[in-house]
Image (cartoon, rainbow, N blue to C red; front, top):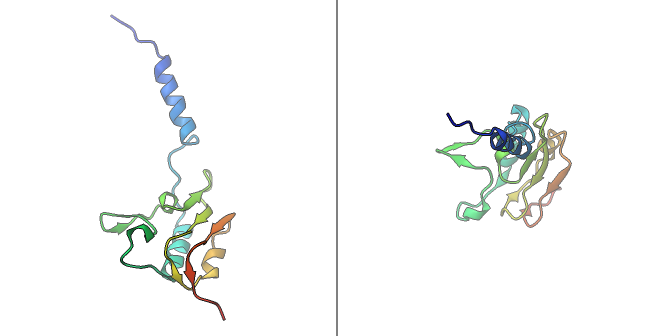
Length: 120
């Protein structure tokens, strides 16, 4: 009987662990997802530009794991949103600061190249 050397299996396992930070993809906390969905509801998004879409829709439903949404970065341990890059997404309308403040671990926010309304 031929015995295979276990080293290649271990290398694959170690590589997978290092690539994921020791765990699977982050799962978005419900409060973080709710804040982002509320923020999105305050925006006007064009219907015609596919490159201007924010949040993936899978099977006709919004993916509730906000850590997998384009432009959203979560920390690997507490699953809080730490960065939000909404630049150049053709967003217009009002920006709800109360929703942004609910993202208590947010350290980086980019809203460049959008068309927000002026605040009074």
